[in-house]
Length: 482
Image (cartoon, rainbow, N blue to C red; front, top):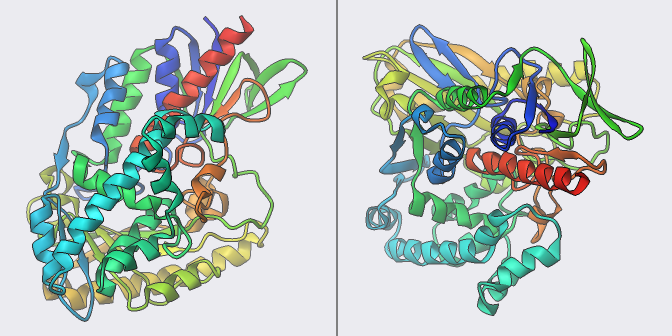
């Protein structure tokens, strides 16, 4: 039995802590905030409950498996599988409804232009091939170098290798399959799941389209906060010593690993750091996008789907602005309306809306007062723009009484440890961008990273996998020292 510290109580840290406790180690989890969950928090307003971070769940079997491994199936919240995964809206034409059932999605695509339904079928097959070539081997084990990764790819045959090598950008893949700019934008949006631009990110991100169709898009009943509470209860039941409101840092002193807090130093045999590895960086290397979020209590039940995306007029200009450090003037708007699927998220006759637009990460060397002033002005402008556009889209929303009751800017994200306010930290641009992601092994033996900033990346199920992978690396390290 060894002493292992976990610094940070997001999904990655909680998963790592549970795995290590299950293996028989004495685990102490330090969390600087007064609640667990990291970015996965919740806000409430007079009975309306909304997430502040991730709002959807893919690969639910990975999440369920994590609870099973921790002996906590009884603590797993219910998942709602969405038949209509998302509605995509443009100002100058019909919407595209992306149903899980391919034939229904194809019928909606044909409403944009004849033949686009068949193109969607071909794109779906291509996305599945990309998943087999890149996604499955990528998620099988921690990335420890090209050789071990390629060995996993080669098990799937030379055709799989060829598929991976032929990948261009996500935008090029969209234009290859679709004639309409609307469905090209639909493909390009999958880059934003990693905070990237479709014009610079690999077509490998198209695998997300396959994951959503093959494994479904899910809502966690009660919101992501319910998932955090279940996982937190699981690790505490396994004996993890959870210490809230304790900011902690690790240091190496001679041959010892110490975790230091306001209460002093403690020695540990290994440390898992559930924080972005780029959080301490001072360089000007580009970061993945941030986001601006606000929450709305609407005094009527809206006839909106669970997820809606309202695209801006000029997608390329939006990303040029974002990666040029500018707040976009006509951003794409993402709206999460959880009451459409889960009656526990809002009282009868009411709707809660999570509204988000992409935002640039800020230069970490910029004076804090300048960044704060920028977001005081930008938040008000973006909020007004979104409310006006949503009102134009649905007159019922325009007529309803509504209250904006919470906001999250890049400044708020930075205060929780996100470098430059970036949601994902590392920017995976380029054909092999994902493989340049900060490694899980630090340069110090016995210290490992977990979370969305390291391998395999952002998204609830991948962050949980990251915690599981980190626990495996810790176990091998401890065995090698025994």
